Image 1 (cartoon, one colour):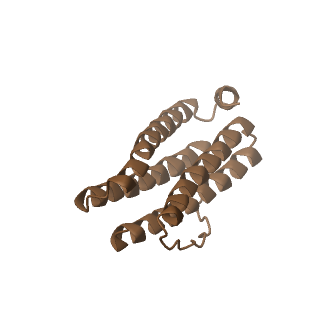
Image 2 (tube, one colour):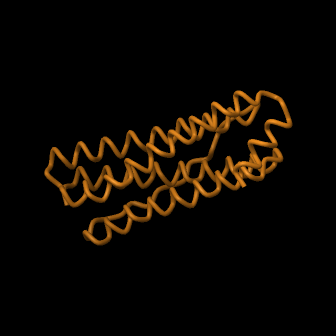
Image 3 (tube, helix red, strand yellow):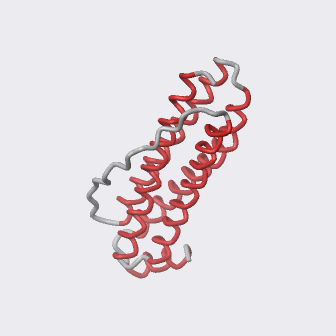
Length: 158
């Protein structure tokens, strides 16, 4: 495997596990805030991100390429309202998408069709996640501080 692609795949693993940990942290914060539906939804994103990341890890092992296990960085953020958490999640989903698009460009430049095929389905799922998070953020901003509206929003995610 091309060393530059291998290095970038390992970087993507690190990035994605860090974002997965962020989703898990946001899940806990939302549940503590009383939004169990939103917390559960965010926890599902943690599981999905871990699963997608493991596909990359498995692929590197299949190609007999060294896997560099990442160190999970501490999650440092402050928030005043649920929209802050969903904005943070959306912004980090965009970072994952950018990494995947960079990897696909690299694969095309190096004619690595196998790795490109591994990554292409992830582009679609990431675009869907970004869109969903943007929609949820819009809905939360509309809710404002109306506790009834927030409860309805949260209930829709259960």
